[in-house]
Length: 420
Image (cartoon, rainbow, N blue to C red; front, side):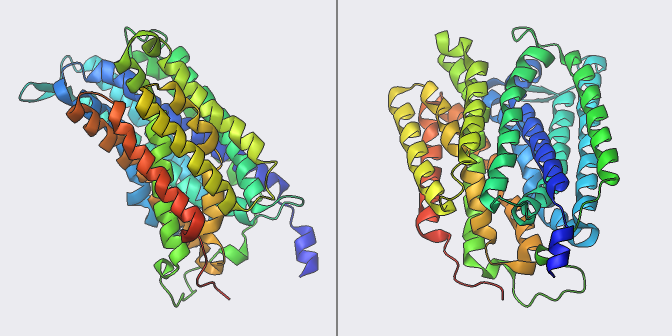
């Protein structure tokens, strides 16, 4: 037993997981930041549904986590960690191709549209929505493998929370860059969106992801028996019978929902307010994700603080900031929430899978289904904005979410049944 532990070196696998989680963050935020430019390109004649239809881009992306969460869990059991990761990367390449197809169809269609009343939507918009769903599917496969692997791979001198936080810092570095990439590299002129600007950046992304898949196929990635199951395993209980996991899925749903709602919708909120807020809208999104980076870098030094205590403090702080933003109608206060959202995922995930043993693979798939919160919250908020004629009071939805996270930190995370 001791010899096996000595021979297994998780340094390179850990670095690989950090790179992959960074890719997840980059693609996730790129998709969110497409809301405003795609609204300008595709939804000029969408009338009172322009905010709702713009948030469908984020909705379709995160919907994949719900629809494909179970499939990704089965892939972990059947194909292992490496096989699941490679499949995720291949699916992601397919998504980029669909985005390219959307741009090509829009340019070549010559006005191919669907009309409902006074609303006109180009068919390219629906192709783009499909691309978002496929991209979300690829990331579902990646995250279902990356997150439990980070928790379980025993890198000397680190804890599970610390490994998640270090990987989260890489993730946040890329989420900080992503708004700048969309606003300054892909769409350099925000007042006149050219859909053809998608071609070269996505061709480069296809090449990068292909290289990652090729490298991963040749990398030794040891399986972790304590958190893996196989088709011959007969698990006597439903994974949902563990209350701390079930409530943890809700916590992931809420957390991802509020995180994405701020990151995705702050740009449209600031532009809706106009003036200096509109001028700094993209910068606000970048600073929000930058706060996530700073928080995760800081979080790597507080690994000795229990995960539930970290979640307790951050949910209170984030809740106070969103309430202050509602009262003052100041989106800059929402920017500060990134600092506190930063360490919520690496706190919730270990709490939710604690003591689950061979149920961990299925639990990871269940938690990935919870990521669909990133689909629901921004969409509901967009509907509220169209209904209420503005974004100011829609942020109450985020405030309610922070209250649930506070509950999970106080009581919901407690393990009532664990696997022997």
